[in-house]
Image (cartoon, rainbow, N blue to C red; front, side, top):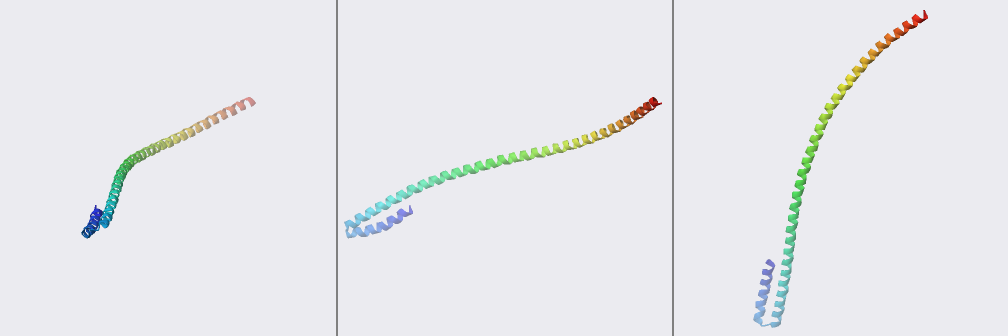
Length: 139
């Protein structure tokens, strides 16, 4: 728009000065130059409109992408928090299970020691009985 005003001002001044001199050829050339400039301004304005439309569309797409990224970030944060919570719960459960297993192992060890002592006592009795029987057969 500014370009139109400047062009018309310059060419208007020239046009008026040439009109006084009655130079028909110069006036025609000047009119043609004005028409060419008007056409160029119109083409430039149309290109500017197209560019502005593209920029607006790109801005809308960018805003959509930003909203999608924010939504995705929220979803991923939620999933990560859920996974961390489940991992912590699993850790607690494993810790409890580990303590239960340790207690069971101690109980098994204690029972094994008691069974071993009982077997040792039983074997000692049976050994004495076998020795007594051997002695009774050899006499």
